[in-house]
Length: 235
Image (cartoon, rainbow, N blue to C red; front, side, top):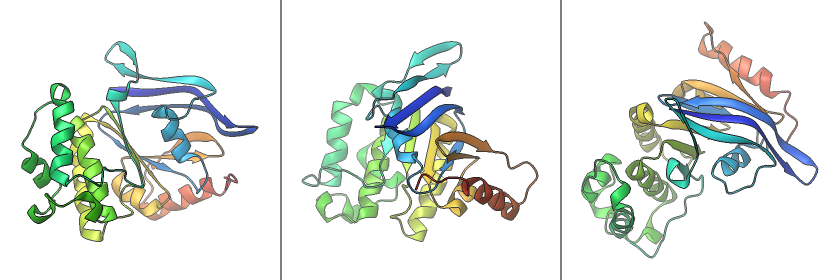
């Protein structure tokens, strides 16, 4: 399955943030979306999630020989600042989500099996989410999209709030689920992208381009990325 973006443009007043974006993302890979602060990474995600109206272009899913519009069921957006209903416990939240999406969920597990998947401690499962840490709320947000299993998962700086151990757990989980999803991982931390992702994509001066690693070692590859980003003056 593929997510195809064609000639996508987004302006804010006279400022063109995204300029004629053309790219194809495929199932089975984690794409690292790198760009300097202010380059437009979140803007691109908001366009794909249809939180922002694009000025020109289109994006769609190719499934075999079928072309179809991206719908809300096809996409999950893991925000850098998680938004969860803090008046519910973690268990109540998952139960509510499962109840209203029951007919859409494949391979339904028990709530505790989902908690186990993200290694959420038993003593935390029945706490109000207002008492959760930022990282715990981010885990709950991630868990919703694992349950829903959308084709496309957009991850906007999702690991920055986790400690080292939990971040490593999340990296392993993303690598496990990538075979069934198109994963686009936005970050400004180059080392994280190089360590986790199969492909590195640079958003530079409003243009999306893939950086080919070829036979470079990690240090040479990082230098190549830095040289590409030096030309970006969107900040």
